[in-house]
Amino acid sequence: MRMQDAQGESYPSKATIVAAEPQLLVTDIKRSCEFFSQKLGFTLIFSYGRPPYYAQVGRDSARLNLRCVKPTMIESSVRDREELLSVSMTVASKDEIKFLFREFQSAGAAFHQKLKKQPWGARTFIVKDPDGNLLLFAGPAN
Image 1: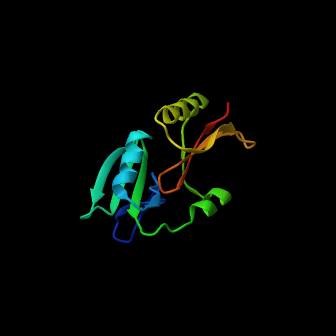
Image 2: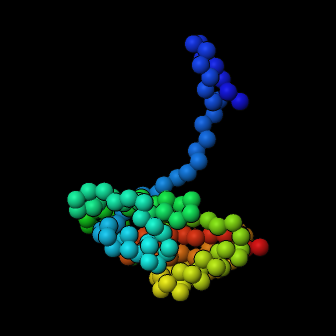
């Protein structure tokens, strides 16, 4: 449905958010971009700065922004203990989540949690990036 203002211009009655781009805090942009491309199959969308301090990687419809910070903002042991997720990404089917897990396993990705069925009806696994960011991947269990 569209609305109309006093000047007769039409505008939508509701805005639709079509994507989200989480920002991951990393300590080395080059290393992070290599990890996402070599281990997780993402491609570099852009890298900014001299030397680079900001970049975006993408795979399919997912986009992740990488921001260089020094030192690490959250201690890795706290992140692991509390399972502080940096991002969640989903796939459409149980076959895809199994395939994605095997793909990352073959590429040598470090797992914080292997593929498992959750009580709330999802299959999930968690990958740990070189900075300790925990990346959740989820799909339906059935």
